[in-house]
Image (cartoon, rainbow, N blue to C red; front, side, top):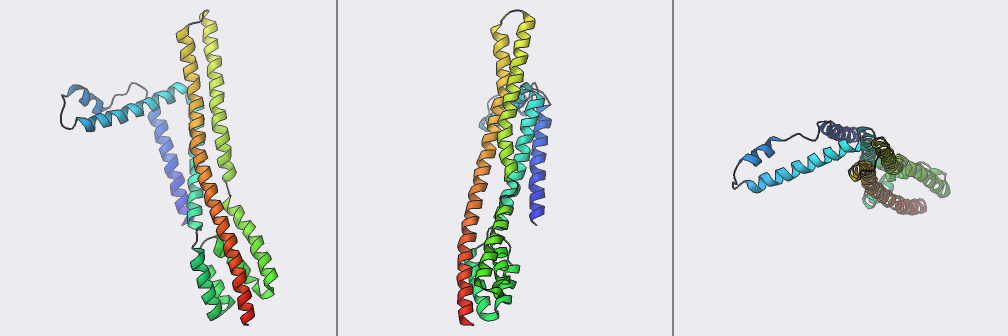
Length: 267
């Protein structure tokens, strides 16, 4: 189920990115049917709805225009950084949500299983519960017959393994956060070089020529910064989820050790 959710999320993000790229290639001068009707008809009671649709169309056309003016090479790479970064971020969010466990309820079930069926019954509860907390509990219960100290060490060791799984692929998101502005700056530098090259060929400094070249060059920088900001928000959210799960695992592990101590004292 986790792989299915991850596949659907990644496919959806890639499909959206491909659609944006395809629409961007249509050009700046496309006119929609809604805009043509709104330009020729008189005012009607449905005018606010048409005005809202026209504003949405204008925004869409503006995004396409900026994408084309920024250049397909650098704007395309920035868009790819956004697509792959969002794909990984969404996969991590889905994984972390599926890994969240009601630790209090799980501890209550384990305590009941220990009192009624012993260690094996408690292990069966952990096997039937998803999430890293249940996996850590299982490892501790599996080594409980060797003593509390061994069980505690097993819990701590396997907790580190689960932490690594929670933080999996986060380095890729941080990479896309860093590389998106770099790609934007590279596009800006290349655009400035092209602008100065045009000035050299023209033989004189034209305010229109310089302003146009600089404007186009800065579009890639804006795009890279926007992508970095979006991915940074997702990255911080994922980190907060991991911190929350880590605290749950630590608190629950201490409670499990206490349960094992009580169980051994009753034997």
